[in-house]
Image (cartoon, rainbow, N blue to C red; front, side, top):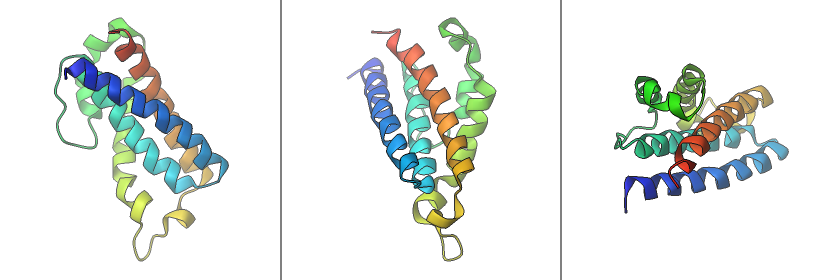
Length: 138
């Protein structure tokens, strides 16, 4: 398996997750939109890094690495890397709370439609970039 094969696998998983996000939105399961968006963004960013020949670290947020590689990405399109990196960081912070909550934080009560829309916008941006960068290698 090559970096390119893995990048394509990540992209496929992200496309499937995007479909699931709509089901969560329609069901008003906003904490699940946040959680699954985080995973989608992580997969997209790591897929992009792999497509560029970079083995991503075992971290949930690699947004800063994407920012550092902006010059390599410019030939694939014009992406708002600052937005993607900022939202990746936010989603990473929300990752565990969105899934498990805490004694004083019930995910299904705490996350709003606005939170879900924010997460979905991040997912859309990351997926658009991943499709542009990874598909180019096919």
